[in-house]
Image (cartoon, rainbow, N blue to C red; front, side, top):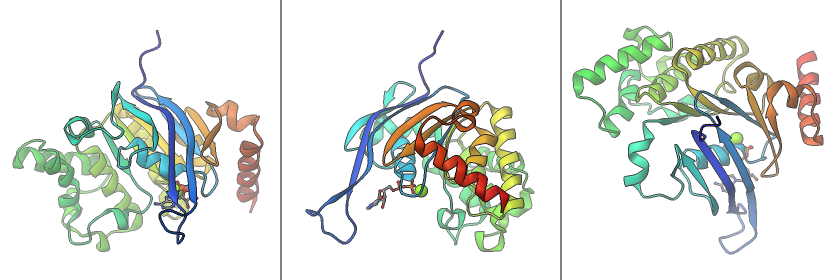
Amino acid sequence: MSAAPLLEAEGLRRSYPARGRGRSGPRVVALAGVDLAVSAGGALGVVGGSGAGKSTLARLLLALERPDEGVVRFDGVAISGAPASVVRPLRRRFQPVFQDPLAALDPRMSAAEAVAEPLEALSIGDRDARRRRVAEVLEAVGLPVQLGRRRPAALSGGERQRVAIARALAPGPELLVLDEPVSSLDPPAALQLLDLLGGLRRGLGLALVLVSHELDVVRALCDRVAVLEAGLVVEEGPVEGVLGAPSHPATRRLVEAADLGGRR
Ligand SMILES: Nc1ncnc2c1ncn2[C@@H]1O[C@H](COP(=O)(O)OP(=O)(O)O)[C@@H](O)[C@H]1O
Ligand SMILES: [Mg+2]
């Protein structure tokens, strides 16, 4: 009884012109042929060192960028390189959360306006319905509604990332794609945010793709993990198995580095 995956990537390849070398110069291969799948309600961690291709993969999965080759399917529909008329109706069902909420949030918008923005962009609800939805999702991320009047500069890092998560939740997605969602936070705020995300995942039955260089973040939230190295998935499976008994040298290096970090 294997249901079709909610999100599926097949053979994703993406390269960029090497920085400072011109468009016809050498290219950097960010993704060299990536396959992955996430089922409804499932949580897939993507781990790897710096430059492994994690953020590129996140952008491709969100159809913010198109692959050179390969395809991303959401609920069976190809969204990579598809026209806006195909992607737009699906967008409310998958939403991004990025590493740096200060960069992701418009400094001139109040928190409430930022949360309402995707609803407006996707033409979801009328003014009243949007206002109610904003209050609802602010509450869901543990923020008082009055805080919605503040601009990002008047919020703590943890509060800002909650606003970014509320904004992602506003359209009622089934899947969040999160790129290093706690890396900008100090350890106590990061722990609180992981708790929140775990609660949301269970409470809403959300599926997650969680990109992180921190294995503990993936251990806390995910049931499966894919290890990315040099643009390729070198190992994939249940978190316990892969991180508990790594079989690929790249995974072993990540686990050893995390152990060293934990002891400091
Ligand atoms: N927009 C871009 N232009 C040029 N090179 C890029 C761009 N985005 C990513 N890269 C390159 O692709 C590789 C993978 O980057 P990235 O996906 O950001 O990795 P990670 O998130 O795992 O650190 C790196 O070599 C990076 O320099
Ligand atoms: Mg990255």
